Length: 222
Length: 222
Image 1 (tube, each protein chain N blue to C red):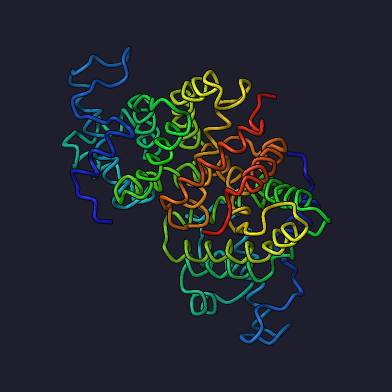
Image 2 (cartoon, chains in turn yellow, cyan):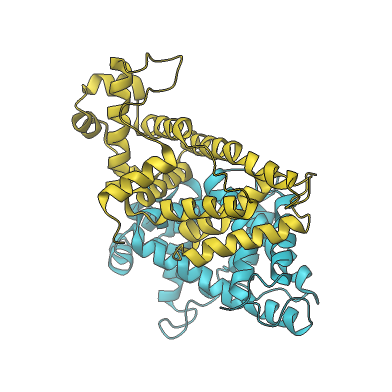
C-alpha cells in the first residue's frame, strides 16, 4: 500500500470521524473540558496501540504514558484493556459519518462498499479493525460493543435504501439492514475469514450481487 | 443450545471428518503408527483447549498433559501454540468431507449453508472456529493456514456449481468459488463481525441471494 499517512488519517476520519477537538458523548462529559480531553487522548493512544500491536498486547500503563495521562485515571475510568476497546468502539460509533447521497441506490451502495474496502485495506485502519474483531472473538463485552458499532452504521445507511425504494430501484418492502449487510458481508468475509485481498472488483461484485438479490425480492421484510 | 455432546461430535465429524482412527496425512506418517497417534492426540487436545478457552490461553504444557504425550515431543514437533493451530487447520482441511449432491444446485447450496450454520452455532465447533479466526487475526502463519482450509473447502464444493451450470441452473461461465463465497459470507459476517445470531432464515436468505445474483451473471468469470 502506498497510501500516505495524511491520506490514511483522512480515511480514518471519513470512516469514524475521529477528531481531536470533537467533544465526547454528550450528557456524560463537558464538551472540550478536561475529562473530554483525557478521553480523547486515551482513546487515540488505544487506537494507535491496537493498530501497532493488536488487542492482546494492549497495556494500560503504556496507554497512560502515550496519552500523557496518569495511570490511576486510566485504571479508574477504563478498568481493563476490554474497557478501553469497548469505549473506543462506542466513540467510533458516536462519531461515524452520515451516509452517501449520490442520487441512485447503486451509487450509494458503491460508495458504501468502497468506504469499507478503503478502510479494511488501509494499513492503519485495517489493523485497528482486525484488532477489534479479534477482541470481539475473545471477549463478550467487546463483541457487544462491536455489534453496537455496526448497528449504528446500519441505522445511518438505512435511509439510502429507503430512498432507493421510493425511487423504485428495489421493491418497497426491501429490508434496508439485510441489503446493507449483503454489501458488507463479502468484504469482511475476505478480510476476517479467508484472508483474501479485499479488491475493488470484490467491492463492485458485492454491490451488484446485493442489488440483483434485492430486485428479486430476497431481502423483503418477513 | 440444547445439542447433546454426541450430536456435537457427529456435527464436528460431518464438518471436518476428524476420527481418532483415521490416519494422518499420507506420505509423512505411517497410518496408525505411533507418530500418527501422537499427532491425533495432540490435535484433539488442541481442539478441545481452543473450544474451552480460546487461542490466547493455549498452553503447550497443558496440551502435552491432556494428550498424554511428553512435553519435549510437543515442543519439538509443534514449537508453539501457532504451530499447533496451524497443524490443526491442515488436519481439518485434509479430513473435510466431500460436498453434497442432492440433484439440484439450490439443494446443494442449501446443504452447504446449513452445514456452515450448524457448525458456527454448535457451542463446541463454534468456539473452535471463533478461536482459529481470532488466531488468524493475530498471526500471519495462522491466517495462511485458515485461508488454506477455506481454499480446500471451496475446491471440494466447486463441482456442485459445475453440475448446476451443466443442468442450466446458472450461467455456464459462473465462477464456482465466487458463488460459494457468496453463500458463506453472510453467515460468517454475522458470526465474526456483527455478532448477530446465525439463523436458519439467514442461511436460507444467503442461498437465495447468491442464486439470484448468479442467475443474473454477477459471478461470471472475468
